[in-house]
Image: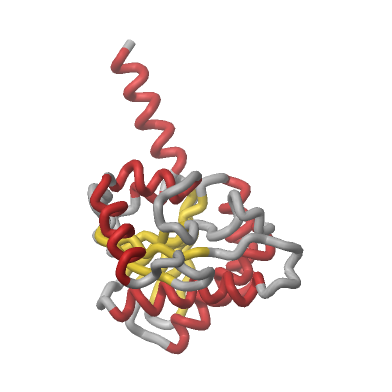
Length: 202
């Protein structure tokens, strides 16, 4: 019985990562993957954090749970020394990856959706742009993003996907320091939305 459950678990994990799509921007690759961002073996994964940097739900909670206490300890240090009032929307900071396969975690705060007329598109683009700038400043070559702000912050995924892909494309066209940017989408629906946006924009 245990072996059957174990084999089923492995099969389900493989199925979760079956959906992939690849695009080229200059010498860099943009990959879309349906899967779990905490399982990515990559230089850095991006955490859709809240301004407290103390962990939360969704991607944020999953990264802290799997990454272990070291990430939270480093976040507390950043709060104490750099951002005592919390990390502002659109900004990004970096910690180690703790127990994750990724070497680093870049924490950024996306905007809460308020209808689209309160600077949300610009702030979302800033979150992606500042994460990429931070990655290149540390000499990293590969970065994985979740779909920032489309969970608890309710940003419509159709709009968010276009901003995410356009911002990454623009960055890769002006900077040649990254080899690969991955968008890791947890649901099939989000993967399809990002794939459609990528086919239009890239």
